[in-house]
Image (cartoon, rainbow, N blue to C red; front, side, top):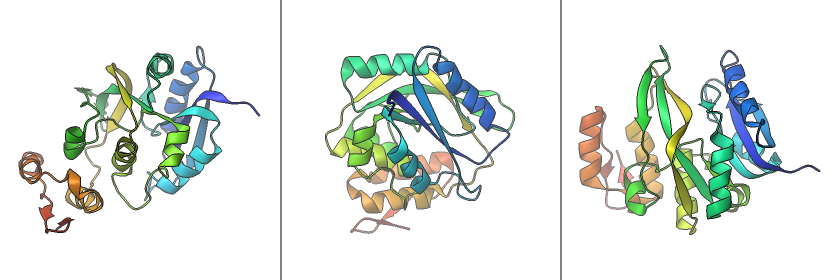
Length: 227
């Protein structure tokens, strides 16, 4: 059986956009021997953690990377990320990311991600979805939780809690498509997360962040978090 340095995992439901994502993966193979696994997901639940976990179990790469069907990897992504992985032996390798508007494609700028620290996890996930993670680490922590909206945030935090190390590539090596019409109940999603990990709840930050973003802040209930 053949094994790879990297397996790209794509949950797909936008058939019109998938070819672009697939081309961006194909460009990586000019320099790196990788595999790309794609699985169909229901448009009503596009980020299906159960199906992504199934891909992870089937993957034959030392490292995994999740890629949405409407995102894309820049040409140096795999080579540069795997070079850092080889030099650092880190469990997670993440890069900064360029965001674009999903409605009209214009750039929303570069997001410079936070350090891999507990304080960062209290505010947001320090790394985003298209990060490299050692396949065995991913499996050891149980993969993506299937009952949380912010499943990737929880995945990275579980790896952090287990002593996993991360390396940050301070260059935007991939593109994330942000859809203004996507409606996520951020209050409910953050509440889910803080109920599971009450140590991440930072009341002053949550209040200020919610006011800035225009949504309700999760309210602490003494045992965890509740609305």
